[in-house]
Image (cartoon, rainbow over the protein chains, first blue to last red):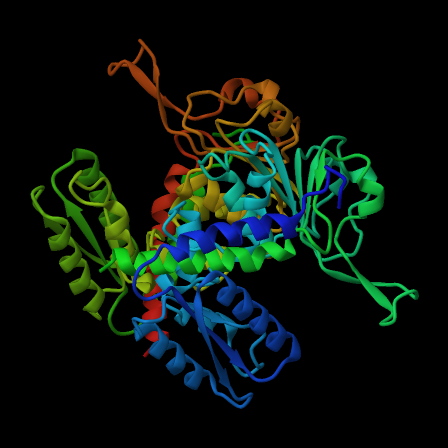
Length: 295
Length: 295
């Protein structure tokens, strides 16, 4: 990690959390509070909720977890969300995905009050993202990418950003942020995906290349312009017999071969990943401020 | 207009209106109904509301206009909108802009019930546009552009569409539609704007070029790839001493000089413009169907 080209997401997220901790420590009266809702016992969900709760505690955010049985119906979950929406002591609500197949995630996310939607998944917050309304909540991964670029002194304004992947949560949201009329926006943005013809011709134009298609090591050195900044959002299993579990985690970028070309690049793991929890905490503090401003 | 390269928006919008008329004639019981809300006596607003009402009448859509005095407060307007939201005989609501400076247009548009928002300006409908939820309403200009392309047999899937201009109502919405996972989407999309460096290098890659920056004759032949399809959304005054009023209306494209290069192009006027009223009527019928499906 000592290569100055490598953007250290662990370090940057730690800086953000430190800043939040200082700001939260100065709050008098009740602390910011977030409630995590988990349905069922999916091991990854248990792990992630625990991790988020631990981070919250470390920086002075109160949290609680509401655990519902796997058999919970959609209506029962929506009732739980309504109660949390109405509970003025709760500033942020996060519905941990994945939910059981019997429950529509979209219905659940859209039920969370937009001003408590610290995960930025409510339809209203996507609308605010389109409207460039800074009072809205942006989903943690795209917001984390912008923050990584900003804190790595990457100029975005006027640059050509190419986003590969058009998922709502990453590619599309990222594109909307990068094109916003703001200091950390104003990029020319191209969005590529599985239907793109001659992908390389477009990715090679990128000053900033966001790889978010979910294909292991898909972005090779031939697809990258020398001097580009590369942000790798992928998290893929890659067969590796030297590992006990038989695989290792790699990104969407062929990191070793692309590294010599770039001016900056995020590693996987340790790049975009660690940013999401930090942004979640930042959003919780924002939700707290919103609630208090509304008083 | 006899040049087969020229996309005739008047003709296409007439076809759409004819189709809607047939569909509406088959409806038994109460007809689809739209209410226009106009605040003050801005002559352009009077003209446009009259035109929309006339078109509605011609195809069998009931309409009414609620005219409020220029002095109307924002709260008074919001109350009027609430009443229309609650009136089950009204399927579509259109708040004619511009509103007086004392009223936030965003607040008014966001107050219209999302399922009656035939103008597609409610935050919820922008969210649905992001989510690619086809049950939402898309604003009339971007939806009209897609319809023009579709009815002119322009293939969008896999093509490189370049949108110049990033306004929410045109450029950004158009980009979101063009990149959707659908038969009339799946384009690689680039969004350019005032901060774009070397605009020509990007516009010259466009298989489909959408000009929506509001600068008269800005897109010259040097910026267009031979064989491209060019959609001109601009409506600009251009000094012309031969006209009694001293100007004529031109688009964002230098039409005469670009025409020889393209495979298809929309004129101004008579291209995108006429589509907006047709799409408004289509949205009204959709709102009517939504209301009846919800019964």
